[in-house]
Image 1 (cartoon, one colour):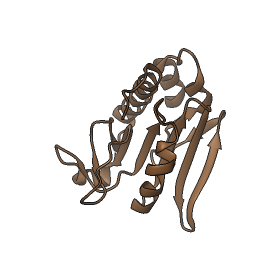
Image 2 (spheres, one colour):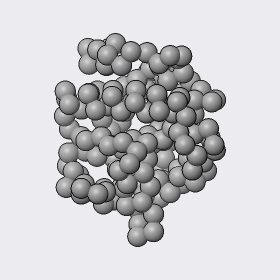
Image 3 (cartoon, rainbow, N blue to C red):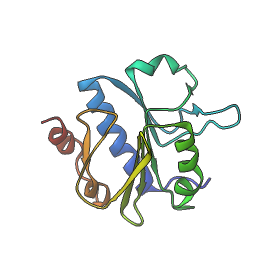
Length: 163
């Protein structure tokens, strides 16, 4: 894997700050960053850019990893291979039954969302507009926040989300 770019790290910081501060205020789940693996089987423990575990499943979190799938995963495309997450990780995340998956492509300016439904996964691609999480009640972002240069103030965005 190639090192993360400044843009990748800015998006990571932006989303981690929004989610962690939102959850500090509202509770109900725990968020972890890209160095906390989730063990999906004995051979694969991916480290998504962000993962969220609901309070009811927090007992699956150990000091070293999440034993099983997260409830919500966010991946940010990297410069080295922007389609890697869509090609390699998404099918395996679906197979693991992760309820909500966001794939952010800052190069194409597309937020790809997959949500588990009774009939399989429903997907949506957005470049603009408000998108709320189906897993974290009350959490939402404006998709176009992700494409702004520089990214908007996390404090301003958080105030909007919490209002």
